[in-house]
Length: 564
Image 1 (cartoon, one colour):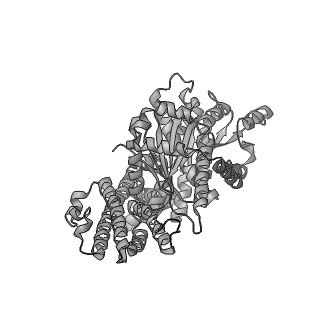
Image 2: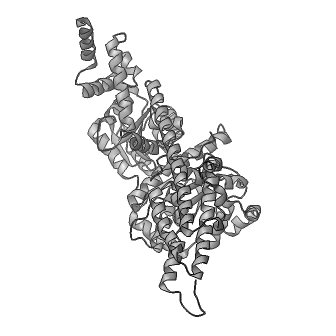
Image 3: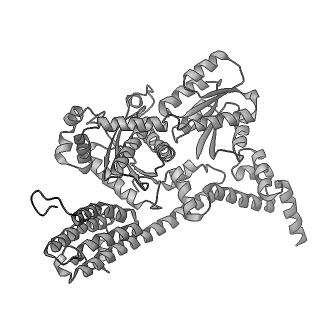
């Protein structure tokens, strides 16, 4: 979904272009209109815009001044200029400032649509695939020292010594982070590695994802990323110098912080799209609701991990926003069975991830392989059983603590047996105990997810039904329900089998038909009542959906009532 903003001080031009881009075309668009540069900046401060189609000569702030503000806040937004004047000096200034196209209003609708399509195609060209991989390989060879990764993870994990000495250590490690400034965290996760990926391939892709994020964040923010658990990344973000000193004496610290958070959350969509397009990887994100001081970062980190594990859909490409509401002899190599054993034991971490993400099929498939290791009866096998058993215990304890459902589980499972290997009469009994506990956890996740999904759909539909004449942009609906609009549209389609924009259109049609049949309002008023900016747009929409014009439908309804 590409967000297009149309800006012109002549209302009829904005309305006609909104009507033009509201028709079916090559691009999936969400369009917005603004009748001045200041109105456009207000909207740009509330949401991420991908392409701006703007008049260049406007009273007050002109298109070039608007362009400078857009580049400062959304540096990768593509800007197409419209003008009624063939002015070479304006063209030069526009293109030097980062505009991607310049055309005259007299060139017609086809040229305007083509210019927007070209701008949309350039959205991901800032990060070209081959160069991205080459850059990732160079960065991996240079390799950020391991101690940087370990130190930042220690900070996120709440290590008291690491937090106490952070100012000195951040300077020593030459990291672009201020130990005294508030910091915002983003957690990213590769949802599923493609078959055949080696450990080196995965490391390279994680570096590539970090490079993509840096391409989009670094122009405006101070950004450092670390990797952990084989498939996760954690970003530490702080406002850059330009954001801190905006030069606007009217802008409060709170406004700057909100703009910073909106920029981060909006940019995540673009990063996710670039990962999918350039790397063919599905990546999920959980973003914090606000920056926090360093002592509070560990709580934010754990909240994001919990959020990513409990997000609606529990599938791929999530965008979630956190809101308040061994050897048996010296010199002898381990035998093949030992290698296999170690390999399976190394996957215990994957079990924790499957349990956290609600992936029951993957969990039980890996769990069965793991428990097979303890089926032997030798003396050494007893120690292996203990290792397996007590490696599983913290996984389940962590998940129960994260969900806070010990009391609920204790009604059906004897939790006193969890930390006592000796109370199980056999290895098979221990295996069944863990399996039963895992199934209860998965059932709990499924039940809560279903309840929350039902509530979400009801909330969305109620908002749409009660705001047909108001703001029904996907951005606004996302704000109302607390979800990123891009993710919300995919989730709504997944849960209902119907696109959210299709539901909005169907609701508008049903309300329009009812108002026309009631024969109390004129067509122009009905058009506004169901959210159309122009009567022409309403006529075209209604005729396409029903085969009748609004007036014809109104007259037929009146005849039908008379016949009864």
